[in-house]
Length: 127
Image (tube, rainbow, N blue to C red):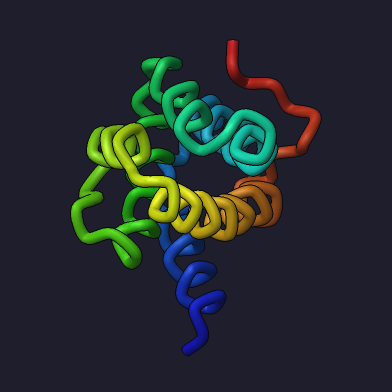
């Protein structure tokens, strides 16, 4: 199994586990679709802290999902909280590697939130 297939399989499993509450699906999907752009424009550290600042349980779940993806690269990342801490304190080379991996993973959450959760890119559930 390729690394890309591993990312996709884990993201699919995560997205399938989102509660059936439509508001949670919309919020998760909306942020999942924004995350790759946030990472590219603001950087990984600011992006994960932005998601965390929303203080919504389903968005904490999204961070935990990304953290599980990044655990493949850094075993010290166990959840969204440790993810925020690691990227905040990472050396440049590690930060760049984490950013690359987070971006590759976030793209899968973005795609799957459209196909599996049915969240449209125009949905803005972050209110």
